[in-house]
Amino acid sequence: MPKKKTNSGAKKRFALTGTGKIKRKHAFKSHILTKKTKKQKRNLTHTTTVSKVDEKSVKQLLGMK
Image 1 (cartoon, rainbow, N blue to C red):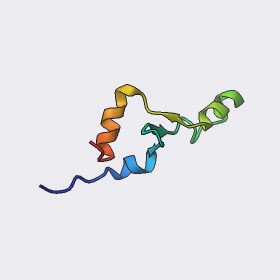
Image 2: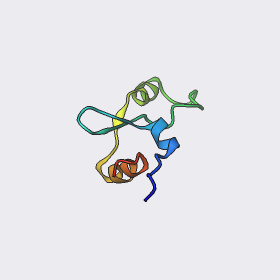
Image 3: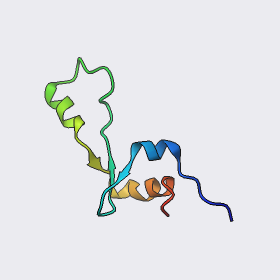
Image 4: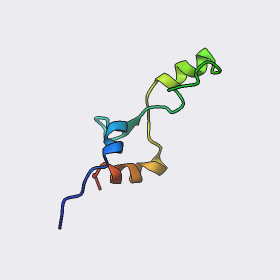
């Protein structure tokens, strides 16, 4: 059986934490920033974790399960 390839788009976008959770960045921070408030842009800067619902599909893309 051949080895499973990691999705190259996913490996650039997600990272694993020490506890096994998956980190991700917020969307909507790349362009058209003039109409967004300072507070909104500041809050989009921080990283967060992938929700429980999406965790299985992201792990599959990363070749973990």
